[in-house]
Image (cartoon, rainbow, N blue to C red; front, side, top):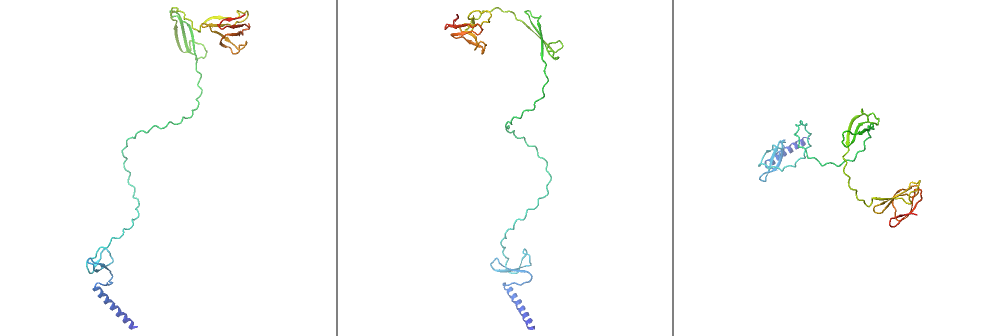
Length: 256
């Protein structure tokens, strides 16, 4: 038991001195509570520096100043912060200039008819009276007008809105010359078969150009009576006298 403890003690002492020897030649390190690391020197040698745990304040134990290491990779961006408190409302800005008017819109559809209004009251008639004018040298007529407010249908002196007007006759002018006949001027009355006693004779007119104009019916009852032109041929009156006559090609009227 005692031999084993003695052996361990010797072993630890030897290891301690070996470690010191290695540190003296720059090939080892001593655990003194600091972090010992080997780095490349500026001149290519190895140098040992000791740090007490703060990577920003290394202590160089031997050799020349070490070179700076490569920059590390950038860390990830942090989460966006919360929105700040809303600031006070600013003062209103100045009113802008009015914009240009837009184009007129399309015409809308026609609206529905409105309701019929109530019936209006009956109006009043205008009544008048007339008599011979006494102020016209060549004669004339005076008219009295009024509104028939009492609905008597006759003019009265107490009717509303009394009005009067006088119309005078003009002077007689000189007789003019007779106008020449036209082709449609009647020049003769023709009574076929002559006058028949007790019968209202049918007659027709001869115009200036020889045309015979008559009142023509389809039968003796006067059906479809109208004016017509008598052409050459045989005809019969419908006045009850049963007159048979003929119109010649020359426009002459002949009967037995």
